[in-house]
Image (cartoon, rainbow, N blue to C red):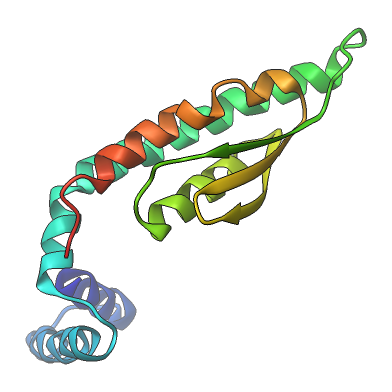
Length: 156
């Protein structure tokens, strides 16, 4: 986070001089100290994010790929004259531990065309699907597997 704050300082200033760099190092340190003290942030969370950055990147790439595939499927449904969709409302539970990963799953489902997370209460999801084929295997999707891998060894 310290590096991100420092890079933001440099980018927002628009040029690099020794004074801007030194002042940026101090400002970034003060902001980082503020985050640690008042926003429940810690060096352990930074280290966790660094260790998990490849898995996070993998998740984002898989999400983009799933969005592209779902776009193609929904376009096929809409443009096919003989297709009769059967909308369905499904409920499923997940064993994801943290509320953050459950929210990420809900948002990933909503970002994927043809599905919308209607509600998330605890570990139970209610999802509206444009067609029943889009609902198949949602509780054990690639999103859930990747989020389980992200949860392993989380920060304390």
